[in-house]
Image (cartoon, rainbow, N blue to C red):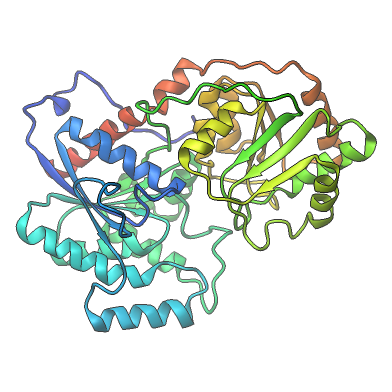
Amino acid sequence: MGNSVTLRFDASSPTFMSDSARLHLLLFAYYYPPENTSGAARPARLTRYLPEANIHCHVIAHGHPPPDQARPDTTYVLPGHGRPLPETLCRFTQRYLLRINERLDWVPAALAAAHDHARSHPVDAIFSTSPPLAPHLAALAFHRHSGLPWIADFRDPLAGNATRVHRLFNYDPALERRIFRHASLCLANTDGLADQWRQRHPAHASKIHLLWNGFDPAVAPPSPQPRPPGPKIILHAGSLYANRRPENFLHALAALAQSGDVKPADWQAVLLGPTAPDTFIHSQSERAQLETAGLLHVDSRLASREEAAQAQADADILLLLDIPERDNSIQVPAKLFDYARTGQPIIAWTPDGSPARRLLEQAGPDVLCLSPLTPTAEAAARLAAFLRRPLTRRPLNPAFAEAFDGRRQALTLASAIRALKRI
């Protein structure tokens, strides 16, 4: 899938034998269950399956959940539990100097919790995952103090990320260089990002590894439930934020509504999930038109993972949105893997050649991919043709299921962690 070389997992490898030496991984993850965000899913999968390779994980996470919801082997911390001076500096920097919320005020508390844990428990390696940047900053500081190998995981790009708009100066390139200099491994979640890194950091090419997002094989998608009579549903499940906006889809749907090719008795688009203040900045009139006609329902609640999963299973078509203003993208929305497992048809606005398009075309379900630069009239015509087709569920491609199985991905990471300890 692309030109990048992935780490290989061989189930017969002695790395995964039960008598392998136990390793202890300290994992910084701002978002972690029971937090209900997509950013919590990746570290949760890793901590579920790394113990199969005899790697024990202790997580430093944000929050203060009720005892019955807290995960074992997890220290939840909130700002205000670190050293006073660093916390004051972090709060000032975050509030007055930064436009992006990097969650800097969490860093001192997370670092204090890490030191407390390390005083009474063994730690063999450090892992951090972003965004936000706070986990990487805490891990960098802990690495500098301890000298332990550090794995920096990027769920989104840092330097060159179009969604990261700064207030005073762009510190992303300098910070990325610093992370690459100190980290033992840097994990990209798409091959496009890994390729960009190799061009920007040739001296650190050996540190760059690809660990796609994926799905948890222990969590099966729900079965569709009976639905009362009504229009067929086109569903987008998940947050709409930054440059991930629905204007291309709404422009095309509004054009079909005006021409009479889509009627509210037959179809309704549902946007389920939080929206940012500028989500409809380029589609306000289309939103109003479609909502008035009954063709669009915006439900801005943060649905539970269970509710969102059931909504995906019950929908007739699933909608995937990439960055709308450009005809290039190196990221893959994490919901793609959940969508693909339902077998439902998928409509995606994503650039030609993007990782998301390549994965969708290999996943198995019936897919309509449209470029963000496709003219509205052409997009509307292709959308109308797709909606006239029979709606059929298609099974997941076995090769796709194998490649993006979260258990296999965690065991791949275990190989890399153990290789670090052998260096």
